[in-house]
Amino acid sequence: MSGATVLDVGGGVGAIDLELLAAGAERATNVELSGGYEEAAAELLAERGLQGRVDRLVADFVSEPVEGHDVVVMHRVVCCYPDVDGLVGAAAARTRRRLLLTYPQERPWVRAGVRVINLGLRLFGSSFRTYVHPAARMVEAASAHGLELGERRRDGLVWESASFVRA
Ligand SMILES: C[S@@+](CC[C@H](N)C(=O)[O-])C[C@H]1O[C@@H](n2cnc3c(N)ncnc32)[C@H](O)[C@@H]1O
Image (cartoon, rainbow, N blue to C red; front, side):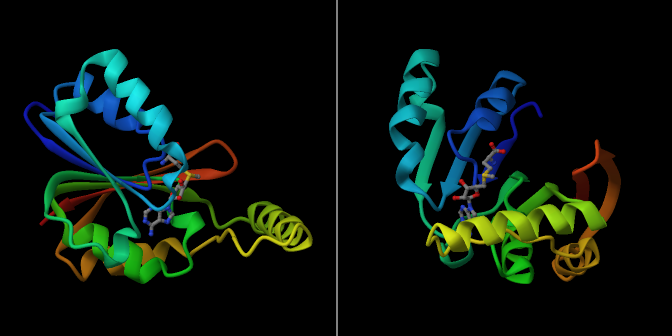
């Protein structure tokens, strides 16, 4: 991680950016669709004196012209976006060395949970939906941009993580 640049897509408040900077990353860019995290994120950066090392953009990453970074992270983001090919493809295209994804496992109980969540969202009038995208589609989208699947592992009953490296 030493000296690496990090792109955190859908990074929320930026907790992962802070950890990776503490682990030796040089700079981080956080591209987040929602503007609701900005105040808390600014406070966290100020507390740690890291304002100069993190760029925060409020935008849809898929349509944002972001430059390439050494390490790209999408932690629990793919499940919040309908276009898995577009999102993973855009992340892979920006990856110089390593892409890290965490997403829901394709398991019956996860799909059932997602259906219940989406029903609740619909009942409350929200247009937001959650998704269980096939992992094979993510591998395909990453491969199309020259990345190879490295490690893949399940974290408990819901989440799965995969790392991809530039071939
Ligand atoms: C479940 S939250 C995870 C936040 C953070 N990565 C974490 O692990 O704590 C998913 C986030 O992804 C963001 N997101 C989803 N699609 C996005 C996109 N196309 N561009 C930027 N952010 C996106 C959402 O706004 C949301 O904040």
